[in-house]
Length: 144
Image (cartoon, rainbow, N blue to C red; front, side):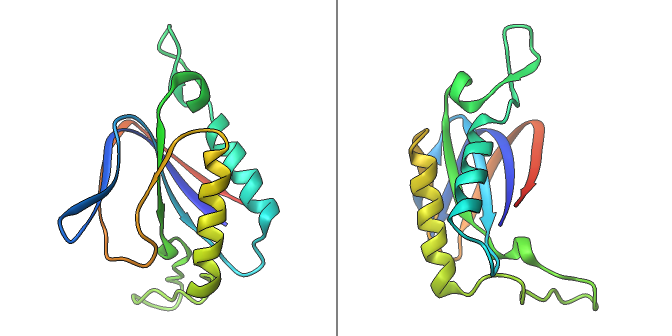
């Protein structure tokens, strides 16, 4: 399981011109799954994400988590996090979990995040337009 976490101001997901998910501040989480992932990976990364101390405290030091600072999560499924470009210029996605299983894992992941904070989402498998105002910029790569 891989997650790319970005501290964000306004962020949204649109599908065919319609906004399906939007946050004003918090974290954008791009998440992908691979064979062998399970509920333990989901629980671990969800807890890790909400507890990352990447928000400023009263002194401007990144010392607060999303739980301390406030805000929401915009969660977007992204199988391309498992792109392998080692054999040329066309990425292979063979390491990404198949859609049938991955949609279930994505739903479980969002349910786990919702135990901590409010979560907006994109739509699994859709052609989405994701707009992110990355604050900092702060971008963290997590893998389990």
